[in-house]
Amino acid sequence: MTTKRNLPAANTVQDETPQKEELSKKIKEQKILVDELSNLKKNRRVYLQQPNSNIFFLTDRGQTLSTSKKELDNLKKDYQDM
Image (tube, rainbow, N blue to C red):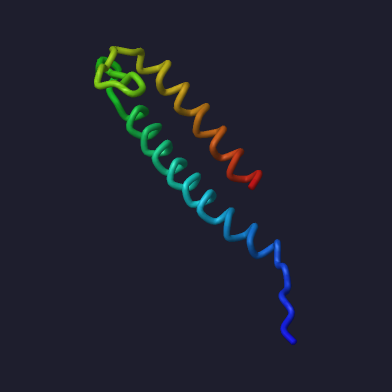
């Protein structure tokens, strides 16, 4: 007689691990982006790539830095909620 045990907790942990790793990677990338934008000189140009395209548009450094910081905060919040 063999009995199978259903272990939903183990399955959930295995499912969350890749998600947490992916989110951790995104957080690291975003931290690097914020650091790079913070260390740029005031007169440097910043270009933003359009999604699914090879086209870049000139953008404001301060606005891009602000958007990147907000994105980093959102990613950190999502990571803590997991």
